[in-house]
Length: 300
Length: 289
Image 1 (spheres, rainbow over the protein chains, first blue to last red):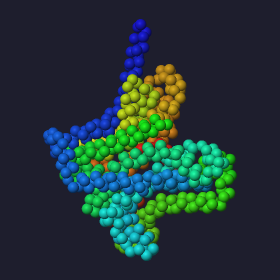
Image 2 (cartoon, one colour):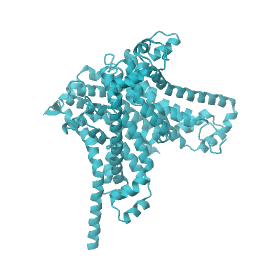
Image 3 (cartoon, each protein chain N blue to C red):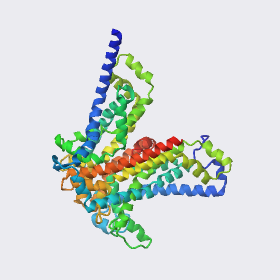
Image 4 (tube, helix red, strand yellow):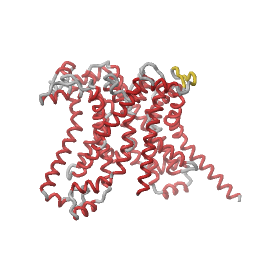
C-alpha cells in the first residue's frame, strides 16, 4: 500500500516536472499566439484610445467598419485575390512537379532552381517586381515588350490588372516550393503501376490522368485550403506595390486592418473588428474543408 | 545508365517512340524555361543596381553602361547599411536560439515526456497551425507596448520561441526516436532536463539543423512585427529599413534596387550552402504555406 502511494507520488512529481519543462514554451505560445486571438475578439467590442480600452460598445466597431465603402471594396477584392490565386497558382505547381518529375537529367538542378524564389525575402521580391511592372519606359516589361514593338504601358494603375499582377508575383515566389511538395507526393506512386498500365497499352498521357493525378488528389485538397487561407490574408504585397490603389482596387481586408491600426488613426478596436471578420471567414472555410475531407475519408 | 528504377510516368521503353521523345524534349525545354523565369529577375535586379538614377529611369537597355561597383559602395555607406546588417544578424541569432530551445522543450514534453494532459496541448498546437499569425498582430503589438518592450529585440526573439510549425516538426521527430535509448538514460538516474540535453538533443541534430536554417531565413525576411517594435529606433534591421524606404519613399529608385540586392545576399548565400536540406525539407515546412 505504502509502496503504491510512493510510486503514485513519484509519478505526480514526474508529471509536474514535465509540465515545468513545457512551461516556457507554453507561456510564449500563450503570449504570442493564443491570447492575442482572444484579445482580438475582446478589443473588437471596445472603443479604444491608443493602447487603452475606453469602454464596451458592443458591435459598434463592426457596424462602423462594415458600413464604409472601403470595406465592401476590400471584401470583394480579397475574394478576387483568392479567385485569381486559384486560377493562376493552383494548377501551376502540379504542372511544374510533373514536368520536373519526368526529366531524366539535371532533376536536382531543376528542383533547386524553382525553389530559389521562395527563399528570397517577400518584401524584396515585391519591390523587385514593382520595377518590373513599372509604367515608365525603363520598366523591364516595357523594355521587353518594346523589343516586340509594343508601346510602353502603365500596368499598376489599371484597376483590372493590379490583382492578377500581385497574384502573379506571389505565384512566382511560391509555386516552386509547392511543386516540391507535390513531387514528394508523386514519388510515393510505385513505378510498377506505370509499368503495368503501360503493358496494358496505356499512353503516357493516360497514365498521368488515371494514375498520377488521382494519387495526389488528397494532397491537392489540403494544399488548396492552405492556399486559400494564406491568400485571404494577403496584406503587405498590395501595401508595398500599389498602396491598395488605384482607387482601392487592390485594397485587401488585412490591409484595411493594418490601416485602421497603424495608418495614422491608431484605431485598434476597429482594426480588431476587421481581424475578427477575417478570422470568422477563414474558420468557416476550414470547417467546410474538414467536413468534405471527413466525408472523403469515410468513402475510402 | 543507372540501375536504380526511374520514378517518372515515362518509362525507358517509351523513349523508343518518336512522339514520346518529342514530348520529352518539350518537357525538358519547359524546365529550362522555368529556370530562366526563376533566375532572370534576380540577375536583372543586380544589373539594375549598377545604374545610377538618371540611367535607371531613362535607359531602355537591361544592361548598365558600366559595371563599376561604385554605386553599390556609395549606397552602402550613405544609408549606413552596415549597422542594419549587424542588427539583422543579432535579431537572427537570438531568434534561432529561441526557436530551438523553447519549441524544442515544448516538443520534448509533447513527444517524449507525455505528462497527463499533453494531448490537449498537442491539439492546441495543431490548431494554431491553421490560425493565421498576422491576424492578431494588433493585440500582440499592444501587449508588447504595455509590457514596455518596445524598441528592443527581446519580444522579437521570443516570438520565434512560439512557432507551432517548429513544435510540430520537433514532436514528429522526437516520436520517431527509439524509446529504448531515452529510457536507458532515465534509468541511469538522469533528470528529465539532463536527458533532453545529453541524449535527445545529440540525436536530433538533423531536425535542429532544418529548423535552424528555416528560422534563419524566416527571421531575416521578417519585417511586420519588427517594423512595429523597432521603428524609429536604432535597432532597425535590413528588412525594416527596406520597408520604411518602400512605404515612405524616402530614397530614389536606383538606391532602392541596390538595397533590395543587399537584402537578398544573405538568403542567397544560405540557399547555396544548404540547398540540399532546404529542397528536401521544403515538404514538411512548406505545408504551412
